[in-house]
Length: 293
Ligand code: NDP
Image (cartoon, rainbow, N blue to C red):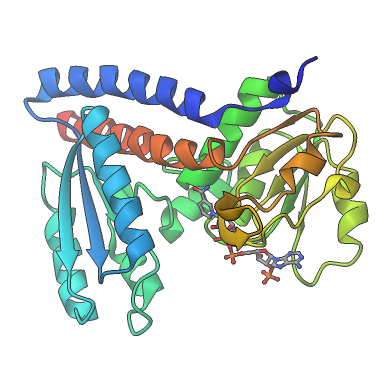
C-alpha cells in the first residue's frame, strides 16, 4: 500500500457529493418551480465567520441551492434575530436556516438555535433533531459528524462491532459523532479533558475521531496500528514553516501507523460544507412532501 492509499480524500468525496446534490436540487427546482433555499444569518463581522459564510454561499450556488444571506450588525438584539428567524420559519422559499456560530457573547446561542423550525434546522442543533439522532431516528444531523461518518463508511463499509473512540464531547462534533457511530453498531467511547488514560483509550480504537481544538495533539503513540483516523481539527498556527492550517492530529507521525487518515486541509472541512447542502436538500424534499400530503 502506498502512502497516498492511506489518505482519505475528503475534498474529492465532497465534490462528488455536491455533484449528486446538484442533480437532485435541479430536479427539485423543475418539480416545484423554485430551488431549495438556504438562509444564512451572520451576526457581526468576525473574519473567520465571514469566510465560512461566503464559502457556504458559493458552494450552495454550485449545488443548485439558492442562498438568502442576512448580514446583521454585531449590535443586533436577540429580539431582532428571533424576529428574522420567525419570518424565515414561515417563508416557503426557505428550506434551511443556518445561524453562523459563534454569536456575539451577549446573544444566547441556545435561545437562537432553538427558535429555528426543526424541519429547517440544517445544522442539526435543535433539541428535537438532537433527540431524534440519539434515539436512533436521525432526520437532520450536524454536518461535520455526518461528513465524518460518510468518509468512514466509504473507507470501511459496515462499521458494526468496530471500537470507536472520539476525542472531544462538544455538542457540534463529539456527542453527535458518538450517536451516529452507536447507530452504526460501533462500540463507542468518548474521551475529554477530564478523562483518565487518554492515550490508552485511544490506542484501543479501530476508529479514532479527534475533535479537540489543539494543534497536533494526537501523535502516533495514541494510534492503534491500522486504525482509521478522522481529524476534525482546524488550527491556524504560525511556526518555523510559517502560517499554516493543521489538524488536531500530528499528521506526519500518525501516517506511520494509521491504516487511513484524513488530511488537514482537504479532509473533514470540505465534507462539512457538502453535508450542509445535502441537509438543505433533505429539508426541502421533506417540507415539500409535507405540503403535498
Ligand atoms: P470544543 O472546544 O467545543 O470541544 C473540544 C473538546 O475537546 C471538549 O470536549 C474538550 O473537553 C476536549 N478537550 C480539550 N482538551 C483536551 C485534552 N487535553 N484531552 C482530552 N480532551 C480535550 O471544540 P469543537 O468540538 O467545536 O471543535 C474541535 C475542533 O474541530 C476545533 O479544532 C475546531 O476548529 C474543529 N472543527 C472543525 C470543523 C470542520 O468543519 N472541519 C467543524 C467544527 C469544528 P471538555 O469537554 O472536558 O472541555
